Length: 321
Ligand code: GLN
Image 1: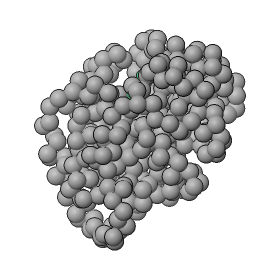
Image 2 (image 1 turned 90 degrees about the vertical axis):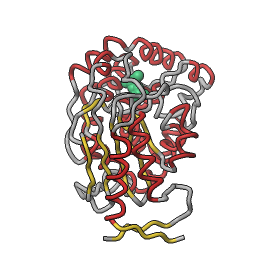
Image 3 (image 1 turned 60 degrees about the vertical axis):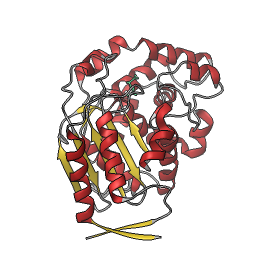
C-alpha cells in the first residue's frame, strides 16, 4: 500500500518518542571498558535524518560518544566497496551468530568463516582486509576517511577511550589470534586488532550517526554532503547484514518488535536504517545484558510504532512537506 507521511508527523513522532523515553530507567553502562563506565548515564539524544538531509535532533545529539560496534557497519561498507558483495561473503560471511558480540564459541562453531563483519571476529577480519595490506597508517586513513564520508563531517578518536580499550581488550586479542589459526585474518593479527580498537574509539554524535544511517537508507547518497559514498547495489547488502545480527542474540526480538534494521554499540549508540525512508540514531549509555542501549532501543521503537512503519510492512512510504 502507498502511505504518505508529512514531515510534521515525523517530527512530532520524534518529539513524542524523546519525551516518552527521557526518564526511562534501567540498564547499566558498559564496565568492561573502564572509560565507558564513567560516562554520564543520563545523556540521551535522538536524531532522525530525512532523504533530503533535513534533521530532527532532540537532546544530546552533539555529544561525542564512543561509536564502538556501530563502527563495524561503516568498515563493512568500506570492504564491500573494496571487495564487492561476493568477496565479503567468501572471506567473512553474512550469517547471524545468535551469540554475544565477542563470542569465541561462535568462531569455534563456524571456523570456516568469521560469520559476519558485524561481530567482533568478523570486524577484526574486516580491518585486516582494508587495503593496502601491511600498511597500518594507510589502512587507518581509509577507515577514518570512510567514517567522515558517511557522516558528512570528521570524527576524532577519543584518546582516553582508545587507551582504556587497548589496555583491557584481552578477549579480542584471543579472537584475533584464533582467526589467524583458521586463516581467517588477512593481515597481521595485532595490527588488525589495533585498527579495530581504534575505530571503536572514534567519538561520534547521534546527529552524525543519523546522517550515516540516512546515507545507507538513500542507497549510498549522503543527503547532507550530497555525495554518492558507495554504489547503490551495496545498500541492500549492508542493510541485510544489519537486519540479521545488529543486536546480536537479541536481533530477532528487536526486528520483530521495532520493524527497523538497527545496529548497536556498547558506547550506547544505535543506528537504524529504514530503506528509502529515513535514517535514525539514538544514544544513551545504559545497556541491557546483550550490550544494547535501553533508552536508544525504546526511542527508536517508539518512533516506528507511532508512525506505523516497518521494513516488512509492504508499504511504499512517501514523506511529503
Ligand atoms: N569495542 C567493543 C569490543 O570489542 C565493541 C563491542 C560493542 O560495541 N558491542 O568489545
